[in-house]
Every structure is written in structure tokens, then in C-alpha cells.
Image (cartoon, rainbow, N blue to C red; front, side, top):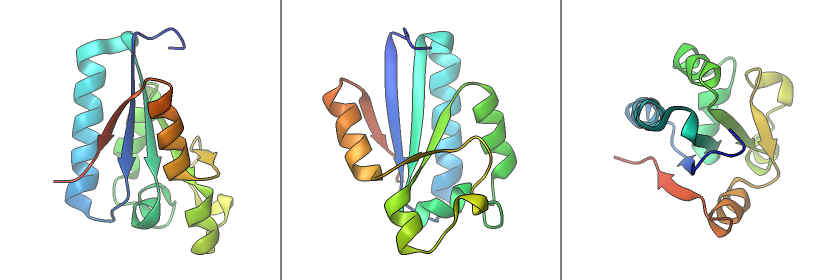
Length: 119
């Protein structure tokens, strides 16, 4: 997917299950539409960090299914530090970025499309 024509970064910073489910729907729809011609990153920070916590996620199975499709999830280390969350508490195959907001800005500067998941 390194040479994917389309690159999209999704931001999720809410613990609202409706919005988390919307993220699953949106990313599935984008992946279905463009297939292997899209690279998708999901950045979770703030209250959204719970979505990728082993003990807190209400949608762990859908997230794992998205990962199997090549969608990458990243947890914000600033949020983890502020909330005293250890990497051992985060789901397997989730990556880490020092700052979720900075990562999103960098992706936008590199030409990635940006979608904030809010209803």
C-alpha cells in the first residue's frame, strides 16, 4: 500500500460509541471503494484512546477486522502519558505516535486527506 494512489488519515478523539462505530463504517466504505489503492491511518487521542485499549474497547473485534484489511491504527503517546496508560494496555498491532495532533498535521502536509470522525 506504500504506492497507494489515495491516502487518508482519520482522527478520533471521542469515547462516544456511536462515533466510534461511524469510524468503522467510514473506513470500511473507503477501503471497499478503493481497495488496495488506498492507505488508511486512524489516529486516536484524548477520550478516543479507549477505543484501542484492551480492557476498555467496545469495538475490539471490528478494529481487528479493519487491521486485517490493512488499516493502521495509531495511539497518541501524549494521551497515554497524561492518562497513565501503558503500552501493555493497548491492543496488539496498534502503532504509536508521539503526538496525535502533530502526526495528523504532518500527514496533511504530505498530501493526505483528513477526516475527523464526528457526527
